[in-house]
Length: 335
Ligand SMILES: [Zn+2]
Image 1 (tube, protein in one colour):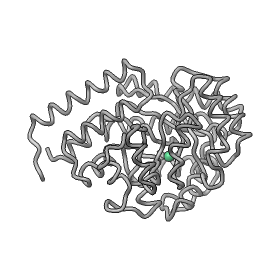
Image 2: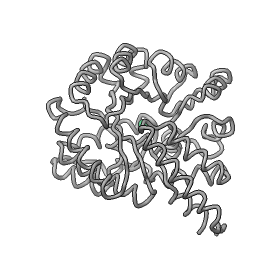
Image 3: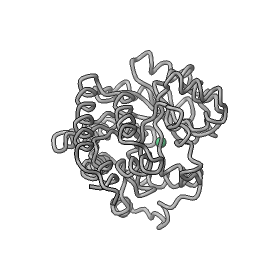
């Protein structure tokens, strides 16, 4: 077996995936037709970070109710199980982009598909309702009320995504602190400078981990602190190559790996770059020439960073160890 095929098949987690961004082109077309909407042919071709956010909004619009969420959740989980040996995922979605009264039904629909995937493929799933920051701090407070009113055991925490330039994290300190007091874990997208923003979100918003966080490298002192404190970052290679124009040489993941940052790979919005979590591992592990031991460190870090309970984490660590042991005793060819 060649190394890429082997890495693709190792058990893994994905902690950074947005449900709306997982829709295959066929499903997108099908749901658009059903909703009577026309979606441009180039919707999955992104030119820049702004273009990506605009196109993601078009994709979200085709989701009209619980049935659509049930479909895309099941499609995503079953596809990732087969293609990438996904074993645990933490799925983000934005409740306030849909009518508030639909939220309990949308939540139930996503949970039904997550339960089917657990039964059929053994994948564990947690949900991350996420604040769409463009809607402002007032809507974010309503969002938290909604999340707390319909709290299920698989809602591990909240996220913060959307247009960071329009709404920086300073606007969400209060709502994040209230979420923390209610016992929710917290993550936030940090996709723009200043470099200090990663630690700001950890220290002021109480984030348990950060999504992306690349620009911390612009300040060596901040970067060293993030590495020393082992702040968990979920990093997404393919989508940021596309939206930021990065490649293997210029992508911040390279120096982050070299300086032992606490990283887990995610897909972000896989349909926009025709990827899956297995392929992300292959690109990064092969691209940066990681040893199998280093691949193992990355896989285990994903489990450690996850919000799964300790029992599930132990199962996932053990699955990874068994698969890695089999891989190192088997033959890896360079074909
Ligand atoms: Zn994201």
